[in-house]
Image (cartoon, rainbow, N blue to C red):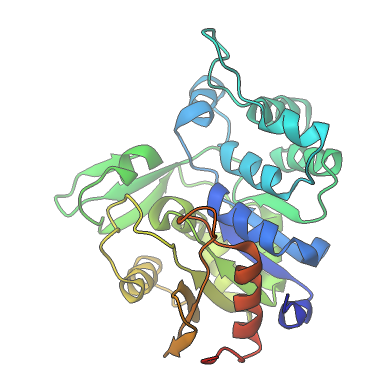
Amino acid sequence: MKQNGLNQYSHVVAIGGGHGLGRVLSALSFLGPKLTGIVTTTDNGGSTGRLRAEKECIAWGDLRNCLTQLAKRPSVGSLMFEYRFGGDCELTGHNLGNLMLMALDELCVRPLDAVNLVRNFLNIDTRLIPMSEEPTHLVALQASGESVFGETDVDRMQDTPIALSLDPQVQATCEACEAIRDADLIILGPGSFLTSIMPPLLLPKIANALAQSKAEVILIDNLTKEPSPIANCGVNNKVDWCHQVLGLKIIDKVLCHADTVYQEDNISYYPLRSAHHIGLHDKRSLADALSLMVTQELSVM
């Protein structure tokens, strides 16, 4: 694996939601404590949504997913953390990892302390930080002037929203802002553009930290068209839309999948698809491509 280009960095930060971010963190886990994940906490569906409705807590699902993908396998700890209750009872559909994080949060002073306890339990070196330690929801503004509340309903929208916001407007986790300011390299995605990548960027202190950061920012595009209102937007349109919503130009380069290696302007193409699933990035290929990008070696082979 061509890891030299990434090993030159003392602090790499990846931002996004559970499935995509977890894949990136797992691919780059060889960086150990030099790698930090800043995790979206606005999900309101499934087990996470039920816990949020009952306990008014942050969304634990994406944090759990990242922890699960970083955990060494097989192990009793990882099996426990991934366990989902079946049957027909109040626990049906709940993930044990979500319940463990919520319980630890109630025992600890901060949600971040709960995450760190699980990291230590699962022997994970990579740091994970929730974007905020206060519960909040994603809100999309439609061209008609009507608002759509919550991640689940935002993903069901037919048209691209004209604006996004958080309700309530909460404070970013101070450790997340510090990590961004200190980063040498920042990675966004892959994942749902509106509901996984955008929410952390909507926090003013995170946006401000990105503006202050001297790190290069790379967006990793999805392998397949996502089922969301931004599905028909090309990658350049996504970047432009992101910059317009934030009022801030943050993305320097984009990494996309293609069958051959080539580059067009600020977009690098590389074979990234896993042989096991069309929607999953191959972890080794992802690490290789990022390494080539940051060392400016990506060229036709």
